[in-house]
Length: 198
Ligand SMILES: C[S@@+](CC[C@H](N)C(=O)[O-])C[C@H]1O[C@@H](n2cnc3c(N)ncnc32)[C@H](O)[C@@H]1O
Image (cartoon, rainbow, N blue to C red; front, side, top):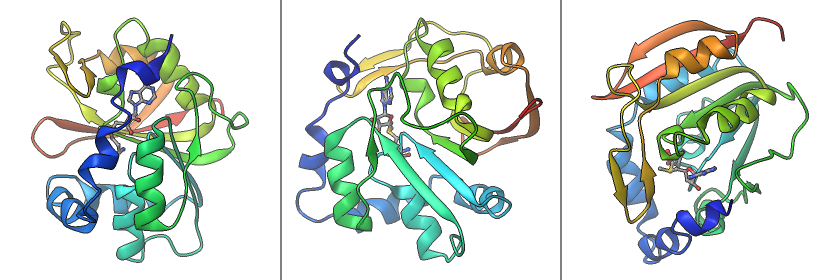
């Protein structure tokens, strides 16, 4: 399946073309649970940001000196995002196809996934999630969730799909331990997950 066809590859570059990046990031930073994210990353050294987009998590953590002595790797499938990330953060994220991440099993101490999973179609979520956790010993999932039930496809907008998944089931099916489960900003859920057999 061609994920790139579904995700609007050019939109991000257009949005950021007038160098509005810092302003956009500042405005968004208020709506994201960066304090929670900062708190989680402090315990890990090798971190992978999966679906990093334009690199807002890196940008925030770096700005607040939370990345000292850490290796922070970013990966995304959208080349437009990657280019904006390079412009803002001076790092070009790795590119992937949305199916196979270019890393070894358990290569990272922590994987971060901010606002990615709810863009995956219900029929793909299981394989997608498995691939994410394959490369990380621990996983920090920050996503939109409804009431824990699988909901129908809720929106099909310009920027790909938006779907709610039953994360509690996915977590259980993958034999993961929930270290913390915080309610973040509005509908966001922050699950810190640990592989029982890493
Ligand atoms: C809403 S953005 C979030 C980006 C970043 N984590 C942030 O919070 O700013 C969703 C990201 O997921 C990626 N994405 C969307 N659909 C995907 C798919 N099917 N497979 C892999 N990545 C996908 C996109 O490239 C995009 O960067």
